[in-house]
Length: 342
Image 1 (cartoon, one colour):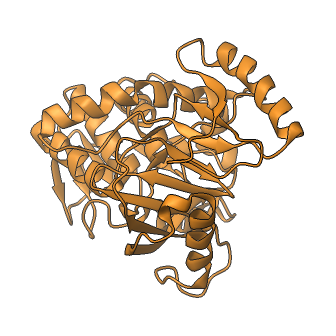
Image 2: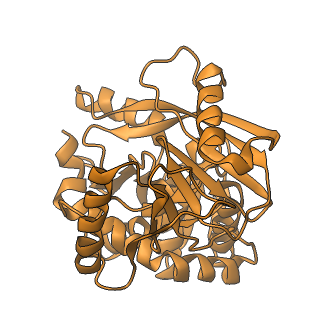
Image 3: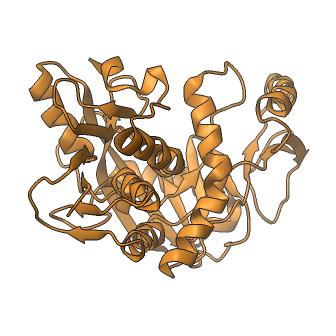
């Protein structure tokens, strides 16, 4: 007997399956390509918060997810026996001028309030050994940002799901309640089903350099995420391409991203490129995750639209969707509901 079928074995699909398995459900995850074959199989893995201002339900939901991530990934590692490469490493951002410094100081105060004193957003002196070049000699450091390696985290989450009695297969019919976590392809199919655009694929490109900075904070500078990983690489990304000819090929747009990262962080100037990645990511119409019951299709649910923030949102998405699917308990913010994209 299968209580829940999850279609899609990316970050959202596996997190929902794991959340349901934790509540005692018999779960089957179905993905023809296997775990992490889509955008969840990338390189970057930055679990970074939105700026602490103009607070809304999306930012509150993300804060809750990022705050629970340390315990979530530790439990996943213990349950399945695989290291997801998680570390709450913090993040550095350059302060370019006096106006940016004034804004950073204001956000120091709002972070203390909105992040409930659990994490800090502070101004510190730049470290010449690691971190972004900054005209003021100052950087923002926050202690909420974390990282995990997507290519470690997906196998870890899959192993934890199986350890909890779930199964992952490439093909199976629907059984029990069905959760559709099928990424950009799913958004295209949903757009056809509803007769309107509910989301689109957006291409991203990223790279990994051979440079061991695994315990150092990640950097966001020049619009680029630079994320040290546990395996001795530093991930750099990513592009955001609404128009593209091929979704899985790398080109000079990635070269430009790498160049910006090396210009911002001199320590990476000579680090060799060891991996490149390109793929399509699911962006819902509202840019927020698309979660909840499938309107007009009883027993079916949607968990999609984890554009750029899928891994960061995954712990709360898994928890909230499991509560909805199994108990009928609706914890999903209004702006995330499926209807918000229709």
